[in-house]
Image (cartoon, rainbow, N blue to C red; front, side, top):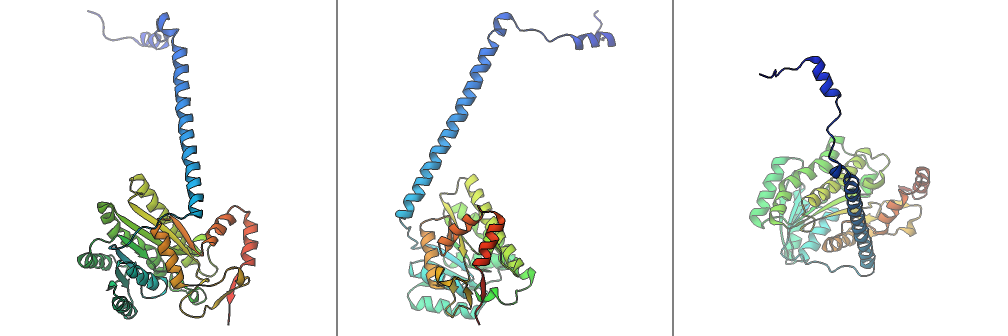
Length: 338
């Protein structure tokens, strides 16, 4: 019987022995096969790059064409919109204009007095609206409010989050506590998306609008918590957009990021913020800002700003050296007009 056990010397000989050589007829074809495989991989890579470049230039041409001829605006008739922070500012005008377009508007605010007056104004004009008192920083309140809206109007298909978008006055007054700023400006977004976005995915229909201020692009002096919360909203928008892209839902559930420049918008009163070059920027009232936001939403624009050209300017500044951007910000600075 052959011994099944090998000595240490035999094991070392086996390990030192060269691997078995392929037959000559097979070994002579190895290099051509490897060359063919490498050539194939290179051709596949070049084809992928070519397709990406073609799609890139087509997208660029489409964007340039839309600058000249904007895409057709979609109808919002019959949609159910949740406007968070509808008691004042841009949210107030958004609710009124959405109702005028045939949207069923759920006006959500913690200030019931102003919210009730808004609903009565919409209803007197023939619109459909209902007032909901909600603390958007509490999960139980958000769940209860969303359930009440669905019982009255149906599944929410439009979400406008207008909380924590600073007004001109708020930039020169004492800021609220850090916890309040972050809870209203950041945590509330997560709670609302947690309650609404899954139902939009189930219905394969919806549009989420993130409203942020200039603080989410370049920051603001003496307003660090506010700037942090606005940057967080920008990051949340990017994450939501990427999630929808991975799940192949970007064509059924749309997202829009709106940059609002608070020193431009007047809240139905005299603006108390001035610019050193005020004639270059002008003044935009909140109702006009709301009209531009709705126009962008109806065209499914991914990112817009009020006013529009300042978004391009902010992106352009990022290409310049840091010291150069600081000098430009010194030039276009804001101050209190007493």
